[in-house]
Length: 368
Image (tube, rainbow, N blue to C red; front, side, top):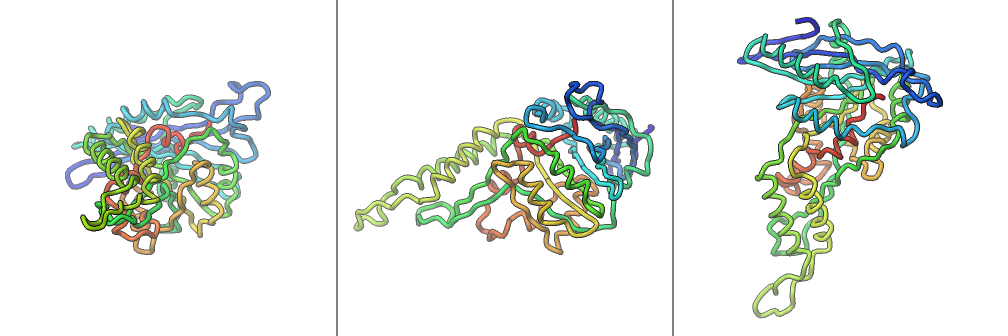
């Protein structure tokens, strides 16, 4: 099957397919708009579990300018959730030093019990994901490019990740179920321009990539129950509590951090009701990833609630690189953001790892 790369595992096959994705042509733009991207080309190959769509953002042109023209991919993301099933997808921007451009790739992964099944699933996902508002897509047939996309420089290089920001405080209440109260700051979608970030990526003197991966996550009754239980516990801690002893009649004072944590968990319960995605946001480079570039990515993705910039430990680096090379979402110890391990419960780790549709639209920006 043309444009499909495959590999065999222990009891299954993995397949990667590819199609080109580029911004709409200049002819479709308003007469007063700046020129759009031109000269896009693609190709497919690589480890067999990923459908990839590729295109180019050429240096020296405006991708878009102003909030009015920035896209909102929420509807497309919701439709993609159903298309993907259990497969992940990723948008990846990869610079070409000395050429003044970025290549953009949309990846997904497929698997099957047989080679034919894996190839067919990859082709099906590729075809359905290709219908992206404001873009044009064509099939990829060359293998060299996709190998370069999945492994553009020798591993492990340097990897920096962006994570939803964690805040933890020890509870002042001795009747708290857990000694720590933790909040996870949501990402906030804003239709801002990504042009400064794209320009900064294109200007890097060595190979660098921005990888944003999503995998469908169904919000089930278990998560909803945990959110409800946490909200009830925080509401209790936010109010005066019973006396410490029957002899001492003074009420326990409210925990000062509990109202903040309560409001955050109520917001999460309101947002995580059905469809969500597991998320991974990674910057990687052949040389050190500049801190200013990572901070620019964070404030571009979510200006009102910027994610934290975390650097994997040396022990984490092989895992982080494997996540990039295979479109995986394995956890890193750096995801704790310096918090004591006992400060984070399972619910906190889940909320830090998933995004709702609005958050997904904040992070998953395609050229247009």
